[in-house]
Length: 538
Ligand code: HEM
Image: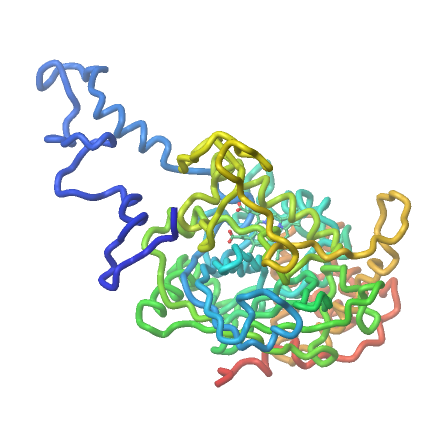
């Protein structure tokens, strides 16, 4: 069936109407039979026992009992909105994706989230924020599943269960709910020093955004764009908010978290309702697709790295406008299923080992969360392009498939879906050459520098931002019970910067250690500071 359609008056039409549970003037049971009373159980006399034969009672309570589905294992708390992406056409030279052609307009659904808190946690906690965008393109769904920070904690997806176990509440007391202020978090990020860069971003003002409308977004990984002539370019995706980048200060975040735990989702919904539609420009940093996949000495397959904008400017390629709130939280925001493997012709992946694990994980988790393999039939997940697959049956199968031969070629169904050729819009994996290699479980040497990029970030901060970072480390580490964890965290800070380490050590009442690696000789990147991005871009 086709996509949702709404008449100008907001009335559902066609397929959408057929799916609307509530229609008709009378209250009915789930089978459409009219009810005359839904407030009283069937009893043997007004004060007698309730009868098992009350099938309306059983249906009503049974359905209620099963209203909840599992929350996402990460990014459980979120808020979302519909919108449109208008392409400037500037990426058309590097990608053949139809939605990046000049003037193309594509409907989108965007979900913002915190990572660690449960579905009912507060919005303004210190955490990374998810920024996931579903583009319903004419060539299929493209999902850009990013965060508000350009780097990630780990370099290899095999550690993802470990970092999340460390970041989620302690398994004994189930505290804290949604903050990085605890021993297991700091234990992990100091034992796995590749996490240093992301942790520093978390402790900076980026960890407490003022509003979803005022956050940057990043695809984090390096992607490979493919042009019509087959040429390839490596890119990193960036979302730049038109309202500028703004954060709360810590005290504001605390007060907002108490007074209004829904601070961010309310802000997003209120702004859209008032017609103050939030906008972001999508941009790309481009890098030559060289065999070593590095740029200016930076390994592009290491997701703990960013490429400073001074070295590779962000080139705007389109405008995202969020202009419609969801009408049902469960149907849309909760049931939406993003996946980094939802790609369209013209956008391909790289061998980033973190991305490889994600390509498995999203599909796998959604089979549990959305109860079976048919979640792409849920309205919010349906492509807006025709679907003619050979997938059949399974839990929550909504389609009534015709024919007898879901395989190809077949000679029974009067022809079968044809495969598109290379020049007819098919998705074709880029034939990247895989170097001859020995099977190993090890990281490349280029993944071993864990302190240069954090030092660049620290050196790029303004004086005020540095004070906030010092305050954040002191507060969050101050919540740890284990002295050894605090000391190891100070050692990591010493390897970033002496002043940062000394000030946090002073706050914790501990001695500041000497660095174990010499301070990296890096230039600041002014674009990393929020100060230069605080004002609206128009
Ligand atoms: C969910 C981003 C790494 C597993 C999400 C969401 C975002 C996100 C934005 C929320 C999607 C939504 O709003 O529904 C990222 C980024 C990563 C990263 C930017 C690194 C660059 C990973 C890794 C894994 C993983 C390495 C596993 C190996 C998951 C899972 C969910 C999720 C299981 C829940 C999905 C669902 O229930 O639908 N991630 N993630 N993520 N992520 Fe990641």
